[in-house]
Amino acid sequence: MCNILEVKELSFGYTKDSLLFDKLSVTLKKGEIKAIVGESGAGKSTLFELILGNLKPLHGTIKCEEASQVYQDPYSSFHPSYSLINQIQDVASTQDIDKYLKSMNLEEELLTKLPHELSGGQLQRASILRAMLMRPSLLLLDEPTSALDNVIQLEVMNMLMSSLEEMGMLLITHDLELASWCADEIIMI
Image (cartoon, rainbow, N blue to C red; front, side, top):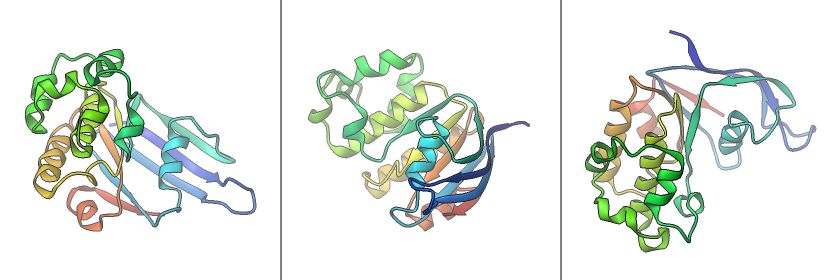
């Protein structure tokens, strides 16, 4: 099976004197979850920005198939003036929406609301829903369950893991227990 993500010999820093990464290499295949773990400021979210092409590496190459991202802060990932369903329909088909709503314990009526009308946990699950409906080959997850209680966190992670035949996932987390439970490999940065 071919790689859906290839990061080779990646070097990056906001200044050339202080590199966040020096010759970092990561590969990911469909069906795999790899966890990126490190302290705040280590460059975990910056790595996602590089993968998405929003930043350019100093050295190295990044090749990836179609990707979608779940951001750590769900309030910044939705426009405040439009309903969630409108924002989801702008980027994805809603064909399998019922399956995901049920697996994430979300009521369909919540999607007709504006982002500020939902709790942080509800909005985070809506963000995951949107990313899943985009049908990416690569799903980038930045602390996707940190705003969820333990029961909902488990439900969401089980749903994500059940979708691995369709995609590969790169997970940023501070939760080593979660990383150990779900990841095929833990990458410390």
